[in-house]
Image 1 (cartoon, rainbow, N blue to C red):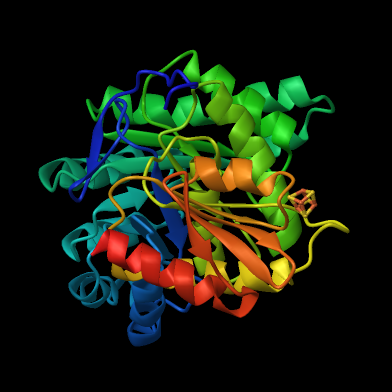
Image 2: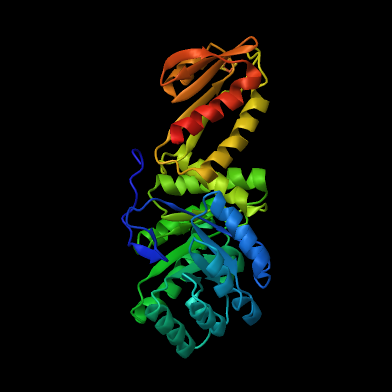
Length: 360
Ligand code: SF4
């Protein structure tokens, strides 16, 4: 919040959650279940809610899947987005089913009459539309060899869809311009952001596995956020979508762009470390996820777990709670003051109970 000047975008309300216009960056994910199987889908969406997902999207590939949307909507608390391609009848039915946003590209759903029909109903129901162009599916992008031309083509493709909606006097628009290549993605967003102030949904698409996809997504999204671009984001991973939400929070927390949550500071360990810090931090991180799911953390809390007394006391002192390791012990800090010693097997239970007390 302190270091990044964010672009001034338009505010768009998605089922009560506002994105754009300086609102906190909203974290999204997408179910990977079969939408027709609405019970399994609800189960996954509830897990996503628990880890803090704020808007969720489901694919609606056919007219059977669209019938699940009202049932899903009834069982979840966060806004529901229907992802639709090509068939305007699915878009119309999704609006009837009560979704909070459509992800649909108006240029791909056929004749002008079909687009008008969808826009008319979306307007009536106050449902925003996300235009999402994806380099992988755009032949206009593949025609070029260099990244700048590809980026321009991607941004132009988004603009074409935007103009269709603008010509129908529809302004509740969110835009994404995703590619699996960071350079193309960043350039495309920059080009688009220089032309329109609609809120932007960020993502590096098809980023890959949990490990590589996290690195790639955070690199790409971090660059864009540094330019002030981005009002909502999805970290796209070939993994359980719960991981997408966890990574998104860590990213925004690391950049100080979301000020809620529990930040864990821990050292990489070295020969001076006389406790099994890797095991302790992994255990503590799992507990923190559960605490965050149960309690609303209103202000940022910093917890430091450090291997030794070289850098340990400094970090632990700077944190709300901290432990600096010694041989078979740890010096416990609270708000910069030493308050005791803790055996390594008690670090996690001690810090968890301190956090719970603090949050109760
Ligand atoms: S805090 Fe101590 S144990 Fe951890 S990396 Fe630094 S010197 Fe090594």
